[in-house]
Image 1: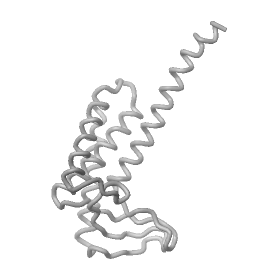
Image 2 (image 1 turned 90 degrees about the horizontal axis):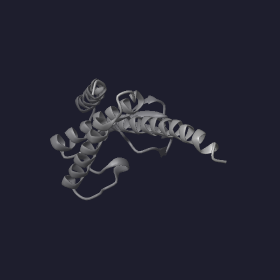
Image 3 (image 1 turned 180 degrees about the vertical axis):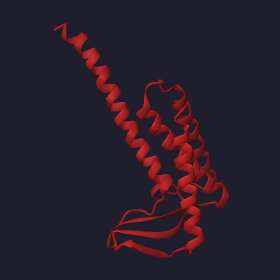
Image 4 (image 1 turned 45 degrees about the vertical axis):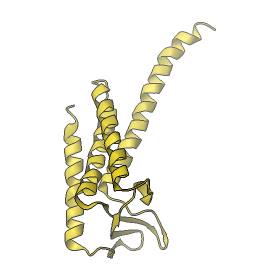
Length: 162
């Protein structure tokens, strides 16, 4: 629970960046930052990740709310010494809350980070999506380390049976 400050920082950066985009850009506007590789493109995303539509606005809110509960339970049950997992979960939490705030306030998620080469582009996303992605990656790494350490401990015991 000491790592919840990560959630606060992630949420603050997400919301401030979206506010700046909404204040400085017109919906649909695209501004080149690094040629065609990185642009700021202000869009509204009524769907889920990658623009997927999984039902209406309330379905997206319900799914996001369920994910928040799941992340909260996982964070609560996380062993005290598991820092990497805690950072991962708190980043996911901050990102999820950021996008839920958008859905409640605007009925859509504000996206603006646009990466690609020429016409070959990734889906436009935001910092909240970045936090969820990085947090999930950290969780995968943390789970891999925990599993590897657990298997080594069990492996030593199992090798004496052979």
